[in-house]
Amino acid sequence: MNIIRTSLIALGAVFSLSAAGQLVTDLDLTRVKGNPGNIIVSYNIDPSAAGIPSNSEVVLTPVLHFGADSIELKPTVIAGRNAYLAHKRNDDLAAGTDLVRTKGDAITRRAELPWQNAMVRSELTFRTETIGCRCKEEGRGKLPQTLAVNFEPKHFDLIIPRDQLAALEKDIKDVVKTREVSKSAHVNYKVGSTVLLPDFESNPAELKAILATIDSVRDDKDLTVDHVEIHGYASPEGTYALNTRLAAGRTEALRKYVDARYNFGKNLVASSTPEDWAGLRKWVEASDLHEKAAVLRIIDSKLSPDAKDDELRTGLPNTYKILLWEAYPSLRRSDYTIKYTVRNFTKPETIARLLKTNPDKLSMEEVMLLARTYKVDSPEREELALTAARLFPNDWRAQLNGAFVALKHNDLNAAEGMLKRSGDSPLADYGRGVLMLYRKDYKTARPLLEKAAKAGVQGATEALECCEE
Image (tube, rainbow, N blue to C red):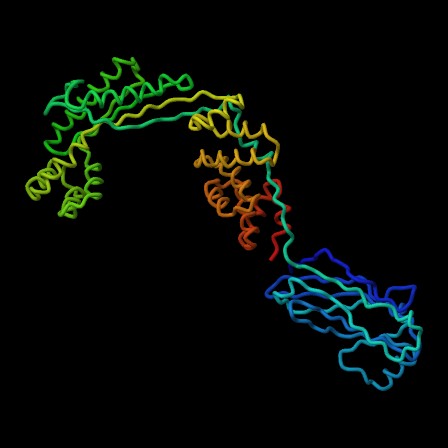
C-alpha cells in the first residue's frame, strides 16, 4: 500500500471552549494510493476541553472541502453529564453520530473516503452547534482548526550533477581530434589511356582544386596531415576487364601526380572500383527517364556487369544514349579524402577566438574548459554548454550537458532532442526521468529516476521524492 503524507498547513485558531485546553488537535489528511485509492481524515478530540455545563452539548461535524464539492463526516456530540444521560436514555441521536461525555478521555477519530481527482487540493474544517449552553459568551471559543492540504507532487528544483558530468571529460592533453575532408575530382584521360595529362581538357582546374584542398590542411599550423586516400571509378560502358584496368591505372597515375608534389609516401594510398553501378543507380533514381523502371530492373538484376551493359545498350538503345551523354561522365571520377589531426588548445582566449572563426578545430573538452572560466549558472557558461551540444551532436557527453541546461530553463523540446542522443548511462536516465517528471508523466519518470538514484546520480533521489501521481 503506497501512502502519501504531506506537510500540513494549519490555518485559523484552535477550537476551544475553555481557556485551558484544545478541543481538536492533530488534524491529518493522508492519501493512500491505489485504484482509485482513498483519503484518510484523522484528528483527536479532548472532550474535557469543552468546558460546558451538565445540560449542554456541542455537536462537532468535520467537513472535507475539495473543488466545488464537500463531504460531511460523522459528527461527534460532546455532552455534559445530564445531556449525555438523556441521549443514552432516549436514544434520540441520528445514526452514525458519536456521543462522548465532556469528562471522558481523549479520543481519535478516523475516516476513509474514496479518492477523487479533485481531492488533490483538500481542506478540512469543522462546523459546530452549541445546544443548551448558558456559559458566558467568552467561554464559547472560536471555530475549530482548519487544515488545508495540497496533494500535488512537490516542485522539483533541478539539481544538475555537475561533478559527475565533469568526471566524464578527458584531460585535454589526452584528447585526439581527428578530422577529414572529402571531395571529388573529374580528371580527364584520353579514350583507353591511363596517362595523366595535366593540361588535357578541364584537368588544370581539377588538379588545382585537389592541390588547393591538400594545401588548405598542410598550410594550417594547427593541423597535421595523417593520411590521404584516392579512390577512382570508371563508368559501366565497355568491358569489365577494360574498366578494371582503366580505373586502377588512372587512380595510380593521380596518386603519383600528388605524391610527386608532397612526398606523402605510405601515407598516400590509392584504390579503385571498376564500374560505379551504385552511382548509376542513384543517378537514374533521381532522373525523369521515360524507361526508368526498366533501367533500374537491369541495374538491380543478378546479371554480370558486362551482361547488364549489353542489356542496356541493346534493349534500351535510346535511353542508353542518354546515359552515355548525361550520366556516365559524372561516374568517371576520383574521390579523395584528407585525414588530419588538430592540435589541442588550453588557453581560454584561443578557444574563444576559434569558437568564432574555426569551431571545427575544437573538442567538447576545450569548449567546456572555456565554460568553466565563467561562474556556475552564469548565462555565458550555460550558453557554452548549449554551443557544445550543437557542435558535437554525436558526443553523448555534450548532449547531456546541454540537456540539463535546457531542462533548467524548461525548454523541454530541446532537452528531449539532446537526451535522445545522450546514450544509456545513469546520468541519461536521470535526465530523461526529470523530463518526464516535468511533463507529469510519473509512470515513465519513476523507473528512470529509481535507476539513477540506485547508481548514485546527484539529484535523482530528490527528483524521485517529487515523482508521485
